[in-house]
Image 1 (cartoon, rainbow, N blue to C red):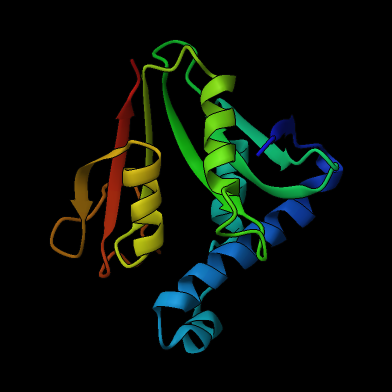
Image 2 (tube, rainbow, N blue to C red; image 1 turned 90 degrees about the vertical axis):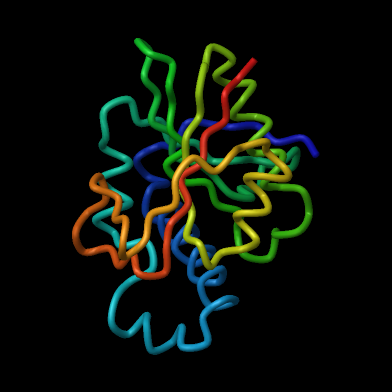
Length: 174
């Protein structure tokens, strides 16, 4: 699959955010039986978290475009040009495009975009088996820490519930 990463423009941010939230909600609902109740209480991928990632130091946001010019997903990266230890803040595949190799193509394009990277890091919820499989088996990440109610991530905002657990992953580049 041929995917190009194009820098996100200001006029695309709202649609990009909404597509990402829709994709994350679909993932959440596929594992949580009470997803509708939960989304009435709190938002999956809160706007605050999205904009914090977008505005973080070293942030780069890209839409993933296919050969026909359609956006199939996107990513927000946090790039550190000093240490080359970079973070995959968010990667999403648009609803309706999952299970077609799009996520893998996006990840491959990210690696090509930043060949200077020494270490990539990211995180995903424990319950999201599909993401865990993707990062470990498809992308070559390794679990480096498991955050949960008994071992909370000190870097996560306090409003995030860690009771379900969160895996932190790293991929050391060769």
